[in-house]
Length: 111
Image (cartoon, rainbow, N blue to C red):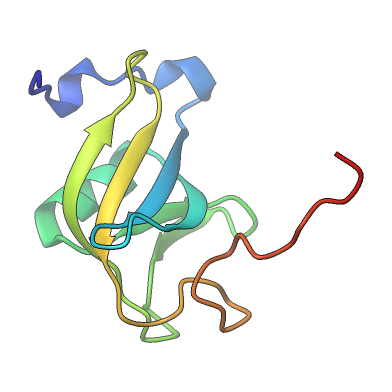
């Protein structure tokens, strides 16, 4: 495994936003997809709590800030192009605003 730094990340490629896949560290379940800008990533690294950029509210969003469903980030992985992140988290509470454990609970028909 190659260890990279925040300076290796290509924030400019997608206008400052990186997709972030959030995965339960223990079960490997995919919990959600969100976006992070450099400020959100730095906050996550500094605090250990998942922070994202809310595309609907145009502001930083600390996961669990309102709901109490905090995600403790244990490891951050970068993809091979250095423009997408995977947060491996410990999360006992639901990730989805609907109360479900994962945001990925809808099945697409006809595939």
